[in-house]
Image (cartoon, rainbow, N blue to C red; front, side, top):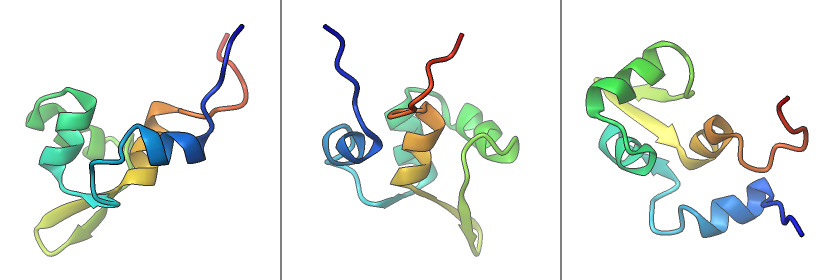
Amino acid sequence: MSTTLSSKDAYSLMLKDYPDVMNIDQMCEILGVSTKTGYKLLKNGDVTYIKIGRTYRIPKAHIISYLRVGNEQPSI
């Protein structure tokens, strides 16, 4: 029996200890990547972000979207 996790469930369960808008260090911690790799993800457009001054702000929903949690169509 396979259970799927919706985007809404992922938002409230997986990242509940993180703020709704994160900085680069928090994003890298969640994804388990280095800061250098985190900046590459932003630069390549893999993760959507908001730039405020010289800082990057990444909404939690965009990280969930990057991870493709709750995606209805399975990849082949």
